[in-house]
Image 1 (cartoon, one colour):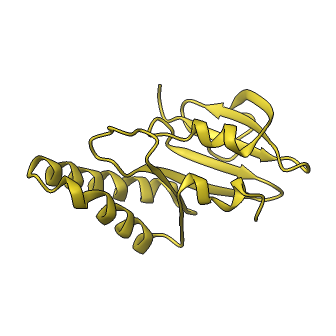
Image 2 (cartoon, helix red, strand yellow; image 1 turned 90 degrees about the vertical axis):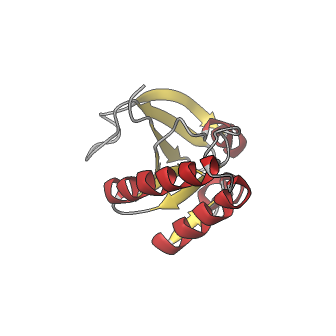
Length: 143
């Protein structure tokens, strides 16, 4: 599937026009993505956010980038993700891959119960803003 990116265009009515790219996006998210849906609610967008999405771009006059970082290293719940705002998604993604590797090793060693909290804490230390999908400001109408 590639590096799946959701491009969310915030509408004046608070709903979202959603686009998707399967190989990431660079300078022009619109040219590098295709329409997925129009006038979607925040709840519909939240349903799309899982471990198969690598990045979310929110466009509302400016473009904000979020890396989608799964928190359950067993992927028992692919929807257990956090959204980490970053201006350098490539660097955050490289760091996150290393963190996930350590988390998977901890799970194999029997420390699964603490791994999720440790991943979330590490992510919060590394980035300026981390949100769970239910608490993401852009999905609550806040900017």
